[in-house]
Length: 264
Figure: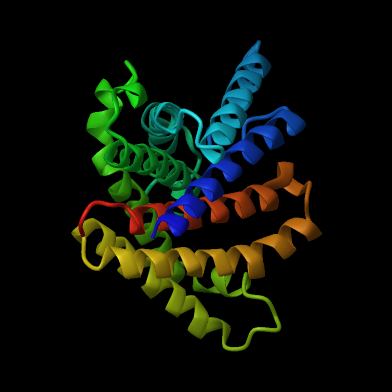
C-alpha cells in the first residue's frame, strides 16, 4: 500500500534528520554512527558538524520526497562505509570486549540496518520512477547494492531477535511494569524479529509479515521508547532519545520493504 510506504519513508527520514540535530546539540558522534574513539582527534568537531548537517539535510529531503533517491543512496553509502571501515575493525581489534559477544555489536548492527533502510528506500524510488529527470549520475555503485538493503536490515532484526534469548533478563527489564508476563513478551518479540528477518531474506510473505513487523516496532516506539526518552532525555548523550529515533526508523524501514512494488 502506497500510504504505508510513504509513512515508512517519512518515519525513516524524520529519524535521520532528528539524529543529525541531536548530534549538533551534544557536539559528539553517537555510537549508533561512529565507534567510540580511544583518543581525541584534533578537528573532529568539524567532521561531527559535517556529518550532522548531512544527516539533517538528507533526512529532511527524504521526508519531503525531494531528490529522495540521491539522498537515500548518499546515506546508504555513508552508513555502510562507517560500518565496514570503522565499526568492524573497532569491534575486532580495538574494543576491550570480546567480539564473539552479540551484545557488543548492537550499535554497529543498528548502523547496518540504517544503511539497509536507505538502500531499500532508494531501490523503491528506482522501481516507481523511470523518467530520465529522476536519474542522477550518482547511481552506479549504490544502485548495485540497493537490492541487498532488505538483507542488511534483516541481519539486524535476526541478531536482535537472538539477543532476546541471550540477554533475556536485560530485555525483560525494558518492558513497562504495567504490562504483565514480561518473559512471554520478551520471547514473543524475539521470535517475531527472527521470523520477520528470515521472511524478508527468503522473500516469503514480505507484505503481510513486513507490515506486522513495522506495526510491532511502532508499538515499541510508543509504549517503550517515548516514555524512556521523556524520562531521560540527556543521560549518556541522549541515548534514550537516540534509541527512540532508531525504533521509528526501523518501523519505517519495515513498512518500506513490505510495500515495495516488487513482487514477493
